[in-house]
Amino acid sequence: MVTLRPVNRALVPVSSEAAHRVSAPNYDEFQSDKEVWDLLQQKPENVLRITMAHCHVDDLSQAVEEGGDAALAHSGEQMQDLVGSPLTKEIEGLLWVYEITSPKRTQHPQIGIGGFAASNEIRTEKVPDGSIIRNEGIRPEKAEGRAKLINATSSYIGTVNLAVKDSAGDLQKALVATTTAGSADFEATDEAGNIHRVWLVTSNDDQQTFIDLLAAEPAAYVADGNHRSAAAAALGKDHFLTVFFPTERLGLEPYNRLLPLNGVTNENFLEQLAENFDVTPLTVTASYRPDSIHKLGVYLDSNWYELSPKAGSYDPANGAESIDADIVQRHIIDKILGMSDARDKRINYVGGNKTAEYLEQRVNSGDFDLAISLAPVTMEQFVDVCDQNRFMPPKSTWFDPKVRSGLVIALLD
Image (cartoon, rainbow, N blue to C red; front, top):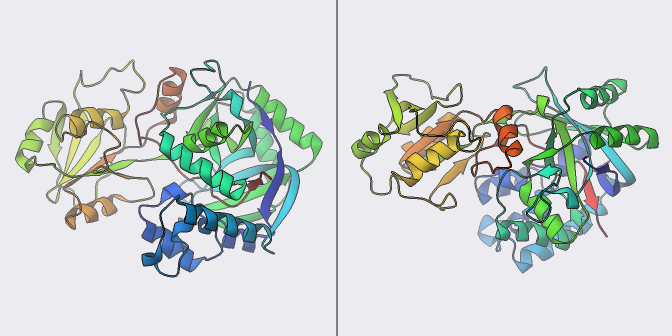
């Protein structure tokens, strides 16, 4: 059973124009503070001034410590400014239907129901039968940073993406019935061209329909936002902000790597690759992106190579070991390059909002020695790992399109 309940006090944009001005990508979708600062120059009212307050300065050279006391104090001030802004209004007892239409999948919009999920349903060692299943380990310092932001702003701004199987398709039907019954209350188009639409659900009967449908689900899987849910639980909150999406409509993009050779020569690197991979030099002129799992691309010295893991390089019965990101970590990053800790700061993880051309550019510029391009994890792989009660390899799932911050905020005071 999965619990869904309305948000007691929700802050939402008053119109589509306001939604465009206020909303922004999540804090973890950026490669640098410069990218955050640039977006704040273009849209100074967006919620990055709260979630990434250290970048809310006239000049980036004035940036304060991320998550430090000064930044948190500024987050609180900017949150109060947003609550009092004519761009937002408060609604009590809210669920919402949330649709995201990607230009990559225009006929299959991602659609879900938003509200509060129960913190005590998160599966942990103390709650082994919890129905909300995490798929990655929690970094305490990262969860603590999110908790500090929650306290500083008395709000949930970041939203957790939870996936449910919806095997009978009843949730999907109810969601589509809402979106086809009338126009969205507001919408916003993001930087990648994804259209985010929100229908506010305030009727008791309509809310109960969605509550009952979620109660029939045996489990929900954390697709994005493990640390946001952990932060709420660590603060003793009995809920966290979420959207439940049927797995059928969720999309995944690659999660790639930029790396140093760490003293290994180009020739020796290629020789060692051949121990666990079939290596094929490519003559393509266009940038390479694998078209299926268990194909990998390596960009080195202005050349692309296609890799296929050899038999014995992973256990097919182990959902986590079968993920390409894990194969890469064990056989390339750890064994060849000597970086056994996936948190090593020399490893640059590049989400699916960046292209293969971007990888080439960073290598050609000398910032890194090589790039590894991966195919997206499949939903079947993702669910398999969760059902086996294992963790996904670090930085292996990039769900796309992502839930946008600032379209619905939960006020906690």
